[in-house]
Length: 199
Image 1 (cartoon, rainbow, N blue to C red):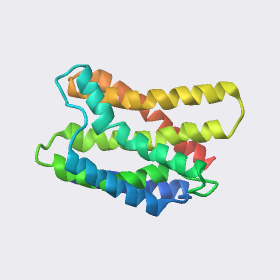
Image 2: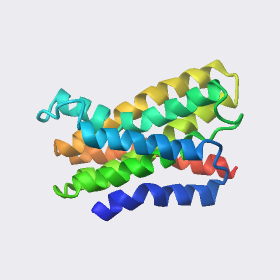
Image 3: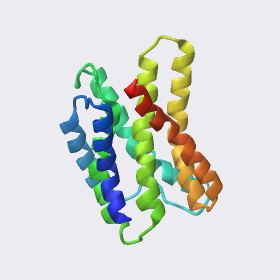
Image 4: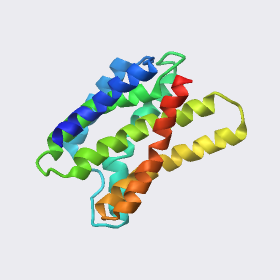
C-alpha cells in the first residue's frame, strides 16, 4: 500500500500525458514548490487536530489530507498565469499532479508505519480526482461566455473539494456505501476530462 501511495500520482501523471498530451509551462516550478510544501508539511505536522468521527475529522480531511494539498497548487498555477509567470496556455492538471509527486512521496514515508489503507490507497485516488476534476471545470468555464456554464463550473469547483473530504470522512466513519457513492461522483469530472481532451 505504501508503494501505491508513492507511485500512483506519478503513474497517473504519465498516463494523462500519454493520453492528453500537452503539459503546459511551469513544470519545474511545480516540482520545486511541491517539494518545499511537502517538506514543510512533513516537518510542521498537521494544521488541524484529527478529532474523532465528527465535523473535526471532516475538516482535518479537507485541510491536511485530501483537498487543500491539491487546491493550493491549482490556485498557485492560476495566480502565476494571471501575473504572467506562466505561458498563455497553462495545464492546471499537470501542474497540480507534478506538485503532488513529492507530496505523495513524503506522505507515503510518513503514513507507511500505520499501514492505513484509507491514507495509502484512498487518499491518492482522491488527489488525482481533484487534480484532474477541478481543472476540467476551469477549462470548461474558460471556453465559453455562457453565464450558466460559468456559474455551474464555479459551483462544481467549490463542491468537488468538499465532496472529496466527505468521501474520506465517510470511509473513515465506516459509511462505506456513502463513501463509494461519493467516490464515483467525484471521479466523473476526471473521466470527462479525458473524453473532452480526446474530442
